[in-house]
Image (cartoon, rainbow over all chains, first blue to last red):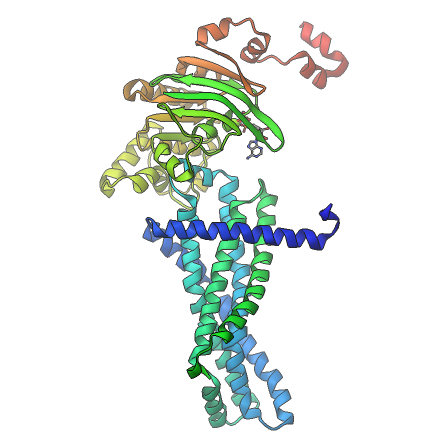
Length: 263
Length: 260
Ligand SMILES: Nc1ncnc2c1ncn2[C@@H]1O[C@H](COP(=O)(O)OP(=O)(O)OP(=O)(O)O)[C@@H](O)[C@H]1O
Ligand SMILES: [Mg+2]
């Protein structure tokens, strides 16, 4: 009936996933209050999700900062304020592009990996084996990945911000002959601690959404190798959509609670 | 004691279990036989609470575990060991970490003692020097034996084996049969074994049960089962295809083949 309209089915699926993700979030929270997983399991996930993602995130940040510099330079030259390009690059990176683009890249890299691993474990009965050995799969599988994603995503985002700004500066000062002094002054003048913090807070939420969505898709994988592939694709797509939707609402929210000193 | 009362379960639109009743007294071994896909593995998973039945009861020493929430079930499952049909080894962990999983999770034993237990359990299933190997690098039969070592590592009160000897050579199969019998007799472990291997069934079973079309067709001692004149049971024991199955394979020639 509804399957005749792909848009409606897709929308229903997203809502169903969102509901499942929400319930999984509650379960993860409950698991976090109890005994934590062994340290080695946590370290593994911080390494896989955090450390191993740096090349992807740094490349994204660097080229985003550089292309931003090139494009805004062309606009700003017309009104002779090329010394403002650095400020534009800095503010855009820190507030939006750093968190969102890092989030999207991580959704692809980390999200697919989480879903494929948990999905394979589900299909090969390893998740059942965990339960049979009196161990809660949410505590053992989901909690470490959620912790790693929530804590590592903001750090990765900050790194993307830094190399993005460095790349933008390199293009401005090195190639486009913007005066270093004014470039530097304007950038510092416009960058706010508040904006950097909001960027970090948003990316933490993105990390949470990626880990929970991917774990949920993994735990609900249909049997077979095709099931794992399908689940991984869905996890990436759903994570990306959730990142973009939540970015809008988070931005509105943080603007609304912006304190006086941040202006 | 394990008791299963009037267990029903639909899976994928199919009525797999249609009122299963079984009782296994403490320290007894029950062997479950039955055609491929008839629901033997599903039945074992119900005993551990890995599946929730549509209706019916699973009593573990008198306590109905069906209504228990997952968190309560962990308490019950600590008393069980289960060998999964496909092994279900954790492939991100070494053999040693797999075998000591329950000890690491639920006991406060020092590492040296756990290692000693792991080596002992691996030795009884005929494995030495594989502690640091990952499951992906083991043969099918070795995986099965590691999974068996993992199931018995924490000395459970109940052991559920899903096809413990499938994929093993005849001698190793016999070793595993003897191990199952030894655990049952020396530690008084209540045992359920699913198997297609009639020789091992003979060796292990105090009682045998045949699952057929979602219910227990016969539940009796091995001698009674072998003497049964129920056609379904007889054909299963002797490994003979039914007339319909012969017609699927041979078509017109079926009659001629069966006369032989
Ligand atoms: N998770 C599941 N979802 C849907 N259907 C399932 C699931 N698990 C099992 N089934 C179905 O239940 C039936 C019984 O499966 P089960 O694995 O218990 O068979 P079995 O008796 O163990 O067979 P075998 O001897 O081949 O191992 C099969 O028809 C199977 O397709
Ligand atoms: Mg089976």
